[in-house]
Image 1: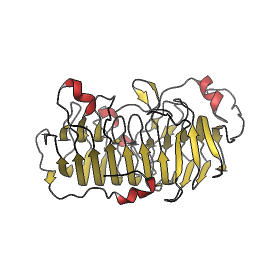
Image 2: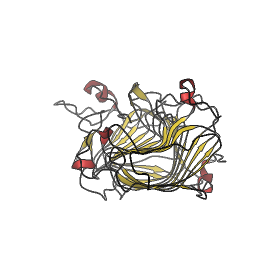
Image 3: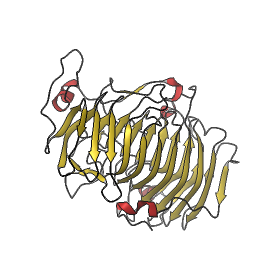
Length: 387
C-alpha cells in the first residue's frame, strides 16, 4: 500500500492553483476555467457545460464552500502528468450527475494513453480515521482529511468513468483511480467504472462512505483497497484483469485491507471494520507457474486482510484462467486480520491453488460452491463486455 500523492513545492502549486496560499504569501489568481484550461480553485458554485469538452491542465481544487457540478454527458480530458487531477477539499462538494445513457467521462487527452496518464479524482472528507487522527495529503500539508463527522457529505457521484489514472511522481508515490480520504456516509457514490489505471482502482483512507456498483478493469496494483479505519460498505464490486495483462507491482491483489495506515499504528482504536458484498474477481490471464519470472502475470492474493482490519466479505467469487498465489491471506508481519473477520468465497479458477494463509484461526473463512458474486448486467451502461 503506497502513499498516493507527492509533496510539491509551493511555487509549483501557485502556478496551477487559484486562490491557494502557500506559507505567508498572498493568494495568486489564475485565469478562469475555460474549455482549454480546466484548472485552478473553485471557491463557489461552478457548473460545467455538457456541450464542451474540457481539458485538465493542472490541479483542479474544489475549496471549502466550493461546489463543482458536472452534468450528464460531460467529457473531461486530462493532460499527461502527476499534477493533473481533481481534488475536493474538506467542506467542498462535487456533484457528478451522470446517467446510464449519458455518463460523465474523465479520461486522457490522447487516444494512445497508457496507465498512469493523469491523477484521477481525490476527495477529502471529515469522517473519522483510525485513532481519531487527522491525515493530510502530500500535495499540500494544509489539505487535511478526517475528523468526527461520520455523516459528512462531499457530494454525489453517479455514472462516472475514470480512465488512465494513477500518475506517479516517483516509484513509491502515485495517485489511484478514485481516492476517498475520510469521506463520510452522507456522500453518494454509485455506478463508477475505472479502467486501465496505475496503482489501485479505488482506495478508502478511513471514512464511512458507502460505494455501490463499481467496475475496475486492469488496475496495476490492487482492485479494492481499504485502510486507516474505513468502516463502510462496498456493494457490487467487479474486478477484471484482461488476457495479456502484466502488473508492474510486487503484490497486486483483489482486496487489500489494513486496519490502520500502513500497519504502523496497531494501538489505534477504530481500526478498519467494513463489508464487501457481492464481489467478482475475473482473471482472464493465461495460467502461469509460481516461479519468479511469472510473478508479474499472476495475482498475489484474491483477498488479503491484515494489520488489525476486520472484514465481512459476503458472496465473493473468483473465476477465470489466471493464477493466484493465495486465495485468502489473513497474515502479515505487522499484524494479522482482526478476530471476527468473515469471508465467503467461491473459487472457480481453473488453474490456481486454493492455498489459505492465516495465523491460527480460519473459522471465519468459508469456501462455498454456489456464490454468485457481483451481477454483471448492472454495468451495461459502460459498454464493457463482461464474461
